[in-house]
Image 1 (cartoon, one colour):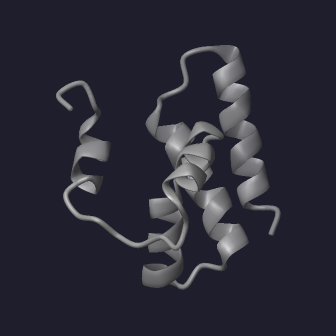
Image 2 (cartoon, rainbow, N blue to C red):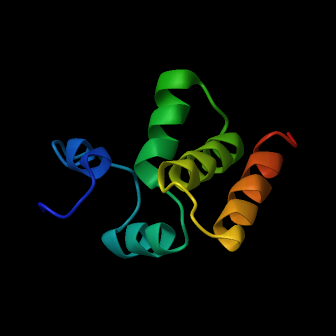
Length: 85
């Protein structure tokens, strides 16, 4: 666990029921989604599920700190999709 960014370490300090299986969770994470953050946005901030998914994806991309042109474009696209609503 020492190689994980601190962002993920604090998320691992407690278990939260997301209403999905481990397999579904892994599938979402590998696609760039963060089910835990989405759940927190919905429950703690009143976001709608579609909005929470877009915001969580943008924040995850931003946290990665894009280095290449492709990564920057992915971040910009996520930003635009977040505010289309």
